Image 1 (cartoon, rainbow, N blue to C red):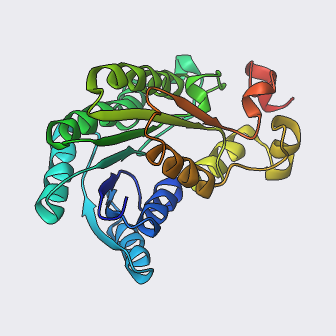
Image 2 (cartoon, one colour):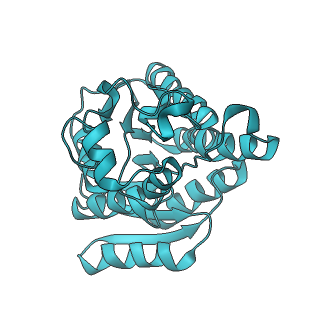
Length: 256
């Protein structure tokens, strides 16, 4: 994969940063992206460079068509090609379904679903061949209380993954990764809202008694890229959370 060019959306921190760093180790030239927080994307790019890789930081709002187009154009302008798109940018806003406002709904759908549509379209138009990897969520497979709109968005990402695998084959492979609760700022925020400590969560709601780490998602990303026969699939990385049937279901789950 050395010399390939990859875009990783939402890679200033968390899962996106871990993926960007891992791809840099594999010799890919990485376009690091965030909507804001220039210091974070610069830091990610500098970390890749400090380890002998190539990277550039690009601020762009991928919840918009213009932002996705800008990001793809910058990748091609700087590196002359595009081989990999990792749609990692996402946003979940916690609230009971009847309390989700129009602005909350639009924001979650734009960041978590529309960004995948827009960036995949723009990338597919310039990629000669390669891979699109969508970071979905266990929430798109198993219901999580208070995350109905996020769940709908991530279920849409999973459905889109399979549809694009059909439409873009054989030129472009399309796969998804569906993490459970990951040890990131977003994961920590969810546990706080649910009133769960880290120890309570892993003991009660995982089979493996461990968090999913951002590096786990990064390793799965590399696995997908190195497996040329894999397309249209969703790899679940949740430490067994989805198999714990009581996980966050029902209005009483926050205190149960």
